[in-house]
Amino acid sequence: MATRFILTPLSAEFPATNFPQLLLVNRRPVLAFDASTNEACYWTVIVPQGWTGTITALITYMMASATSGDTDWDVAVEAVTDADATDLDATTSFDTTNSTDNTTVPGTAGYIDQVTVTLTNNDSSAAADYLRFSLTRDAASDTATGDAYVLAVEIRDGA
Amino acid sequence: MAQLTAGQKTKLRAALMRAWSNNRTPVAVNKTDLATLITLADTWRNSNAAAYNTALASVPGLTAAQKALLLTADLIAVYMVDNPAELAILNDLISQIMQEGVS
Image (cartoon, each protein chain N blue to C red):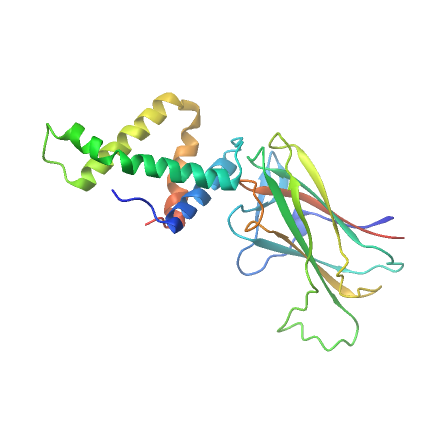
């Protein structure tokens, strides 16, 4: 297993609507995912050489206020290969969402928790692809109150 | 004072959660339980509206809206007295309720 990317709040990209707020909490940059609205953000990378095997996303987060309940996380992958007929000007082409649901939050707000999402649906990504990861808190389905603060996302493959 | 609709209660829940999040206030109930608590509080307030009107009956003159504001003012004042360290949440909550458009 190899670490391929460390995705941080400061390198996140945002859709036009329903995106997490970029905040500083105790001087730490976080992405604040709302508890009532599904919010999403993206990270863009070029897939490195040697990309292989099972791909996973390890989400490190803490809760702003909740000390009970659970969180649901969705990660989607969009991989565009050289000469693909994908008009980036006008379309997105994310693969089917990968989810990890019902992860119980820490009993103390501010303590971190780490959730693994296996990216089975990774849009057949391969070395040199132009790739985006989309991260969404499925607030419509999870049960924890208040914001979830994402601190970082690690992307691993099977190398 | 009528009861809040389901949509208004959902907006109130969102506002409460944001106010608590912004102020890092530990909250030990989940979203479902919080929704239940809001319904219970709203039902209790509505069930006791007649008793409130009866209590004020000896001094007539206020409109229904003014009596509602009087009750709100009393609750805010009591909250401030009892929770002086948490006034920021109160301010934030009012702002969040307005942003949610609970009306």
